Image (cartoon, rainbow, N blue to C red; front, side, top):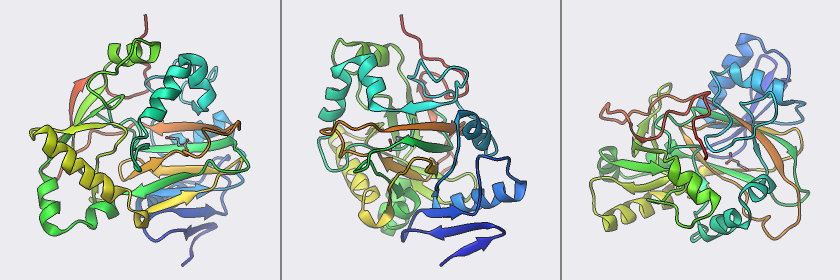
Length: 319
Ligand code: SIN
C-alpha cells in the first residue's frame, strides 16, 4: 500500500512497523502540513525513514524542533560538537577514546543473550525522550543495520490474562542496567556518581494515540518492583522474548544521508552487533525530543528515584 499525502509519499516497509517517507527535503523549512503528515506517519508506523537527505547539525536540529523541544545531547556526553549541544554523535571510537578498552569489554560482556543490546533511549530518566532522530554521516559498506520493534504490537499480541497481569506492574530502569556498575574505571565511577534511576509502568499509555505499549527493555530495566528477584527475571524474560519477536521488527540499511525518526514511547531498537570484529567507520548523529513522564493504564505516573529529568540541561558532573 502506498499512501500519498500531498507531495509526501509514505510507504510502509514491514508488517507491523516502519515506513519510508519520500518526496520531502527535510533539510529545508517545512510547511506545517508536512510536519503534521510526518507526525501522523510516526504515530501509525512508529519509525519513519528518509533517504538521500543533506542535513548538517543545524538543519537536523531545526527539523527536530518542528516536533518538540530538544534535549541536551545525552546525559553522559560531555563533548557534543562545538556550538551544537543537542547533537549526540554515535561512533564507537568516541567511547573507546574516552573510557579506554573498559567500555568496549563492558558492552561485549552484556551481550549474554540473543536480545541483549535492545533498548529504548534513556528510559533511566523519569521522562525518557519522546522521539529520536538519527542521521547517518559515515556508514560501512557491509553491516551496521539498525532494527526497531513495535512495543504496541508486542503488547497487543499478549493474551488477555497476561495483558491484565502486566497492566498493573511497574519496573525500575537504571542507567547501566545494574544496581551499581562494577569496576574502578572512569566509566563505572561516572555512572555510580551520577545515578539515573526511575520507576515506570511496565505498560505505558501513549499520550497521543492512547495505545498501550510494553515499556521495558534489556538495556535499562533492572527489575520489576514489588515481586521477588526470581519472579522479576521470569516476567522480564517473557516480555523481552515478546518485544524481540521478528514479526514486530523492521531492519534498516543505512546510507550516508539516511535519517530514521522513531517514536521512543512505542519502540525499542537494536544497534548493530555485526561490526565489532571489523575495522570500519560508522558515525551517526542523533537528536532527541524532550519527553513527558509516562503514565500507566491505572493513571499512575512514573517516579524519579535518582538524578534529574532529561531536558536541555547537561546535569551529569564528573570530578
Ligand atoms: C541508538 O541507540 O540510538 C543508535 C542506534 C545505532 O547506532 O544504530
